[in-house]
Image 1 (tube, rainbow, N blue to C red):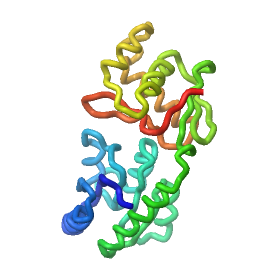
Image 2 (cartoon, rainbow, N blue to C red; image 1 turned 120 degrees about the horizontal axis):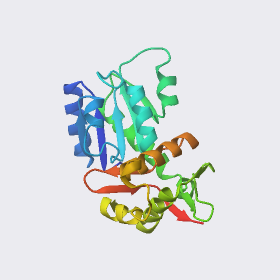
Image 3 (cartoon, rainbow, N blue to C red; image 1 turned 90 degrees about the vertical axis):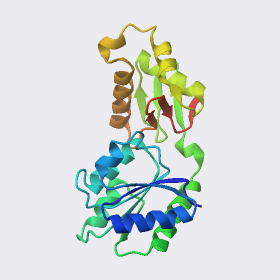
Image 4 (cartoon, one colour; image 1 turned 30 degrees about the horizontal axis):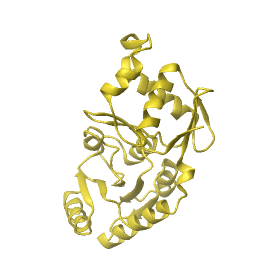
Length: 228
């Protein structure tokens, strides 16, 4: 059980090139990034099914990168690093990584670790990842039970994602749905609405926010969303 797509963030060009070739030979579409900033500045940094990252990165440190990823995706995260500080393992696990391997490491070990994380994720009950939309109470209910109060614009937005059933919703569709509300561009428009909703969810629950951007297209709610 291996992911179909994977982001590899490591500034060691020799290691990155070798691991990319090895994982690609197993059928994984690997996209290498020399630094965390390269990943975060890419068109869709949260689209990957899996992430393998070093910790010693020039811009955003690996531990901080994991925290950013965990706010936007529930994808598997494997750390492969030569950082040998005593508290390294504790730091990466608390940040949200699924597993840690210390360099030097064999490529086969990396593949086995990826497979183990994927197998564990696949065994998870899908219902545990379901978000619920209570339209009468104007609340979004996270999988851990946290309730997020919604503004009228938030509710209209989430109603679109409910109807889309996991598919991408274009910006045009969302703007048409929201145009009946008076806030409009004065309150930041569509981008502002999405930003505020994400922040509201982040304050209510540590679970990764499933509302993600599809660059140049629109937005998608990646986790199951049902009405109650």
